[in-house]
Length: 458
Image (cartoon, rainbow, N blue to C red):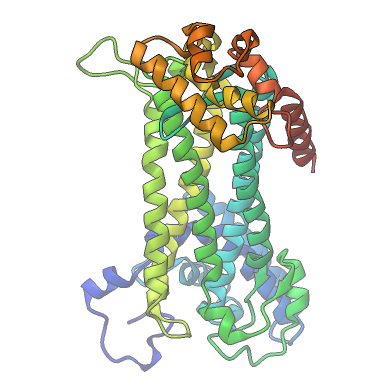
């Protein structure tokens, strides 16, 4: 049992399989740099309660800096007694400073130490994710400005619905990601609250100046209840929801792009930088980047369900089950950031096939414009809808496009149509009617672009 930080009351060594089963150092070493920060701040806090002199605290901090450099340089080795990165850091410090190092854990539990490290780690990673989202948004705005009058057949139920500006579609992605970014900002307010000083459950027995400590570690405030501080994992479930939401959005967009780049459509082309080939078929250029993004979404959702399932059955206090919260979070944060960077590359290099989009416009897309035409002649919309439906049926029965019907064929259904009905079958004219706020008209899109730019500046 030598070297275990809790070995005093035990008389037998832990079973070897149990050693392997319970250790977390193979994954929680990702918290190393956060743990060094926390240890240095804690050492200074112990000066205020006379556990360390200022000289001793300075020596501890200097030694922790040396440990950090040695760790970065790959010069440190883990011991079988190191259950986690926190006990490893304490061992390395104690080996170098003796009793001075051994005092570092005064008034502290691994419960509040671990969760403080974890919040710092998530805070830094979410900030990076927020930045990666912003990069995509900027590229969406740049691409949107070039394609305000690029028109494609907007779809519902995977069937052509109405002519839509491509910029309008791109901005829909922008605003989805803006909500994800807002979730990051809101979550960071709750994540950036400090548990340190809460001890195991009841708070430290030393009068640590927690507010001062929070400022040192960059937290906005302290968590006010020690019981809550060490047992709560709301900040974990919230983080995983953000990752799932981002990947859910990227997955749906990836599905659009996969379809649009396929042979029946060819509206867009995925750059070779983000495509792969086939081991058998020489002609293949597969959108693997997008398919992997779609697959990663399932992984993020799985990680979120793991934590929700973990939390629903544990009592309101720290239990060892909570060791299992780290890997899903590490995985989700790292994969989300990677996915955002890959998607950003896809957007930056995306080739738009304007003519293919225009050629794909089925004249039946303008059926709603025909109904609106009748409404402007005082026909109730529901009746106008029925009349145009009949005209569409006539065209389908004759197996000709809607705009190739003769005026007399159209007037047989409704004499209210005049020769100007054929002016409706113009893509740009169709979207120009929809300059309502939030619509696909060019004026509306310009306003959306201006709003998007304002949000990016903010």
